[in-house]
Image (cartoon, rainbow, N blue to C red; front, side, top):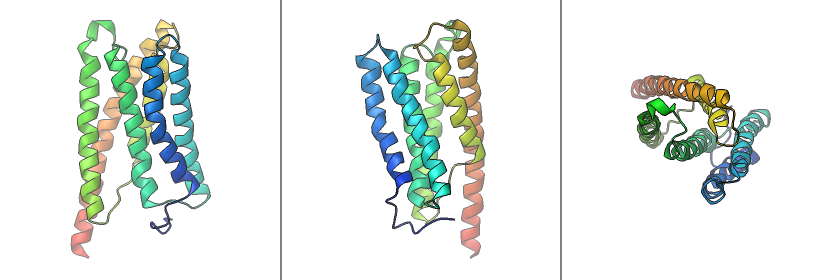
Length: 195
């Protein structure tokens, strides 16, 4: 059940804002402390923890708002895109023999998220919030695990190989989420026209 959207100030939404603020912290740690990548990894872990916690608290405390439905996935997307950019720039998203795939994966995700953002704004102007679906949540989980495995905080080659495969799968699942998002949006727009 959704609360009064004018009362968006609550703990889950605060955690969402914190996660957004952690993005520049991650970027600074990643680029300014290249010999201590575990620091940026910890920032990412903290951001991932706030993601799980805010969703749990929103449901548990019945504090689900339109702000949370819109900004929670937005915070996830911005964090994931920031990390994917860092990893792509260091050639860590794809195997050495497929180096162009680093930027291809990033570009696909940028285009996908741009479509999602434009769609969200379009729907919001019509008073409709289309929240993330099971495919989007699955993609986020795959991205988190894949990023942890390929992140340059360890020297385990097998872990990196598994992570690279998981990230490719995550991109595919993310595209599936986009398709279902579009279908859901069209359904809701048709519903508005018939009312």
